[in-house]
Image (cartoon, rainbow, N blue to C red; front, side, top):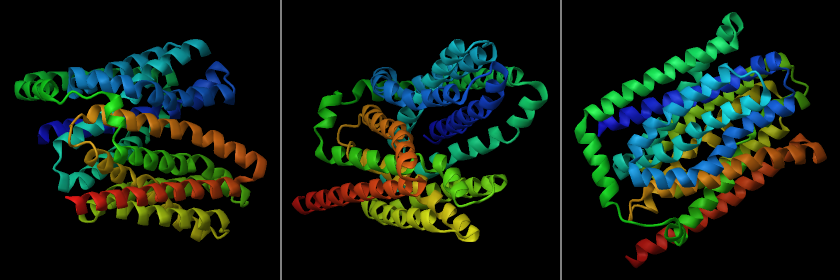
Length: 393
């Protein structure tokens, strides 16, 4: 069991690191291929769209053939994506390369979260998921630490080819260890065969799970695009662009703290209670950040806000797990959750960008606070429904 969790944790490190790496290569690609910012924006959006388009099919495929095997094979698409990116000489072919790579990214999270939920004891799920999401952040930091320097030194195409080799090696290593350990293969096949057969429609008939979907949707709508608009908010406050990295780094530092900290609190207290308190604090610090002009306070608020926005991920994951444990078809449940979360993440920058253009950047942050309030209301209803269930029992 620990062996399988270690494999999934390691794959998450590389998955998030690969995604961050290709995004950091975009400025070099854009300069070489003479792409405009609209084209760059579309290439970036492909990864968000993949979560919408791929999550439901991959949920079915992984429940049919085994989550572990499907997860490992997604590395093929990263290798091909970096290869096709490296040989791209046109915008159209680059779209194809990014689409191939997005298959891996769109597939990874719904499958990986389902595996973590299956392998973790209920009383330790919050902590494990918190550590699992945090390892993705470490992957982003570690794999992107020197990529800009490498791309500048040897070129972005050669850097892409290095990533082809890395992803191919990871694929071969994990395939070797996965199929060498026949016990894991047999357990995976038996669990898939014996799993209660349930379709997507039946899962969506679960009213408590519907509430969890609302929580996920509004929380992602409130938090997923904050880091995108944070630099624009700071510029509106006359803060020098040269130090914007300090604030975004503070925000990402908060991400790490929040994912590990709130995950552990979830194991000690009810997940709905922890979520409501965290979300209410998020509303408070969104407003404080939006209206503060002190650089010191903005840095502090950025760290706290970062911990609250991304820190709710492990809490939401435990909600998905506990509302679907009676049938155990976690692949499909997390696929549905990923679909709605990805939809919210795709809509958020569009909505907030429109509001910022029409009514000012501060009002776009006010709107995120309103979305977070809707998430709180959904969580409160969910909390009451769970309490009523315990009373009946």
